Structure formats: C-alpha cells, structure tokens
Length: 144
Image 1 (cartoon, rainbow, N blue to C red):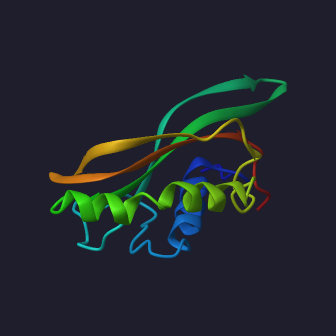
Image 2: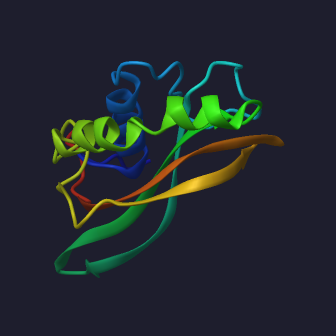
C-alpha cells in the first residue's frame, strides 16, 4: 500500500487536534463516532467534496473540503446558544494558526466558510457551527 507525506486522513486528525485544544471543547475524536459521548460541545470532522488534478508526469494534487462541526445539545436553546456562540472566533483562530495543519497538507487553500444553526448528530438535536476548510494536498510518496 502506498503512503504519502500528506493525506486527507492525517489532515482530519490534525484539524480535530487543533479543535480539541480550544478551551471548552469536550470531545474531538479523529473519526466521527456512531453516537455522541454525552460530552458537549463535541467536534466531528469528515471530508465533504474535492477534486484531483495532475497525474502522469505531473504531480497529483488533491483539493478537498473538510467539514468541521461543533455540536451542542439543544435541551435549553438559550443556554445552548450562549455556550456555542463564542466558538466562531476561537475555532477559526485555531485553524488559521496552522496553515499546513501540522504538515499534513500543503496549505489551507482558500477561505474557511462557516454556517450556524440547527443540526442533528446521531439522532440528537443540536445547535452549532459548521466550518468548511479547503485544503490542498500534494500526493508525494513517503520514502520507506
């Protein structure tokens, strides 16, 4: 199996590590769990879309969008909003501080786009942020 110096999987793990370090985030697993841990706010991350360019005599490059969602349970909407609202700036600042996501990507390849609102995670109604993080990955084989 070929391994690469940069990879989408490693980028997701790095993003979750950055989010986990944000004060107040209770859980940010490398892979989305089947059910919430009961720890809120909870971050999940996964690939959403992308494209590949190059190949052959040209280095293969991937342009991917990684979605990061910050969820908080909606049992008490006023409390949920007050808790989750401040994460806009702190999560974006954490992402912006690592333009190569700990050397797992070539670069964050464009603006980080966000949205806010009602969400669902594992059949639990939540409220929170979604960040779309565009990344560029150069697929260079790792030397063994």
